[in-house]
Length: 315
Ligand SMILES: Nc1nc2c(c(=O)[nH]1)N[C@H]1C(S)=C(S)[C@@H](COP(=O)(O)O)O[C@H]1N2
Ligand SMILES: [Mo]
Image (cartoon, rainbow, N blue to C red; front, side, top):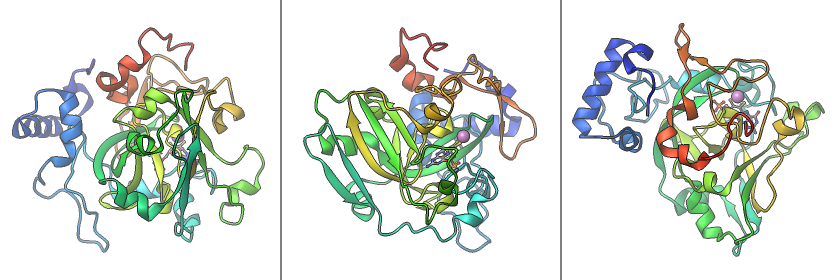
């Protein structure tokens, strides 16, 4: 799966951690490691539990051995344009965001359209921990331990009709809570979409938590999508509506800048964005840039979804 020798992208100490982890877990393939990453036993002093409200996860690293970003980093450096375009301004501005009550309407081309309360959704499906890399198109990345459930499980309850080819996600529209929505540069609400097979892939989750706790507003509370092999903007926050549709959805970013943002937006170091090379990235907390990986390192899991497609054209 990896084209780059592991030793080139992480320090030696982490290389050892990864080998030990693979050995102790008896894991043979990276794909298995990915799904098992959350089952990894705590290894010594990992997270800082000295401050109040401690993170509640035993995970320490992704399947490559790269350490989790800290809870502090993940909750204080955010893209969330409904609040502000200032990444460090999201946390303070979102402090009073109302996440309850919250409901999500699942509809469109389905046999069982229904509106779910967020608390019900959390009890309907097991909350699984998934440690994923999040790669922003701006060229930074983090390793984040999400809690959530596969989107496929919710879609199965809805029973998509055969005409359904795509899933369209819509985020909350509420000028009274989102100062950024008073500005008309963007066509609110935030909308994103996935092809049906992308939506059904086991890596695609709906997240309700992070670091073993409920999501906080900067990360999209109470309910957001996480699609780890695509640029971060596909992972839409604060979802209120999920529709099964026939036509390819037009996202907020496609509307805003069609030449810059395509529907697929798979992480691809070989396809530069007009303003940013995508060949490398900076992991938040590190100084050196590191090479970016095709499909963000998830090629073994999702590469076949794009077999025969020209990824330079379908960006
Ligand atoms: N509703 C909504 N979802 C959004 C965004 C946004 O502005 N609004 N920004 C996206 C971008 S560009 C990124 S990189 C990720 C960041 O997720 P994080 O802040 O949890 O790391 O959220 C994505 N989801
Ligand atoms: Mo992003």
